[in-house]
Length: 244
Image (cartoon, rainbow, N blue to C red):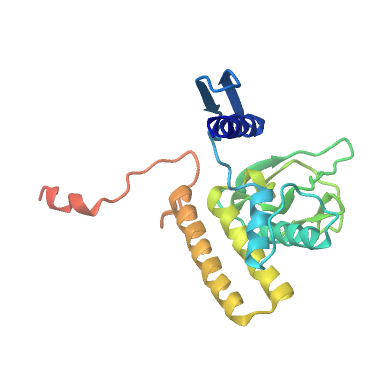
């Protein structure tokens, strides 16, 4: 009986040693032994990548998550496309994080002003409003709709709306793009009205968070103070301290 119990103990030790992430110390026949379980945890959990967003959308439509972005699966490729479209639609509105005022646009040797692909919108800066020129982006250059030419007599100062990759978006906009793409995926791939209604409510809440971010980061005011200016905002709680 003692021999049988001893064999069972030895077998249990061997099985435990065989398991991954285990280190063994001691003899193999009944001596003292220690099992050191190597448990490693990530120091930082990144839940705002394209992969995590695609997995969130897959979960919305009841599909299993993936471990990498491989577009051999048509469903994954379609969801990734929806995420990109939602991100671009959101950025096209022009927010504080991707709008740059007073950006210099320089001419090349042909007196043309090239426009990069990540420039979503371009317009003459507020300080240069003129009906004698009307620039738009066309065929990779800045085109004047008034004179119907691509050439310019001088460099311009413009207000630019940029497009950024998903990783460069602020956190609240990543969540907004994920919910927006999830709503579209549920509408086109599931067709459940109740689910779409629930996702639309989450999308509206995410947009509200983006508007709060916009107000906090933009430092907007009714007087229209722009860059290179400063002012002291009115503080209602100091009203009682006024000296008459």
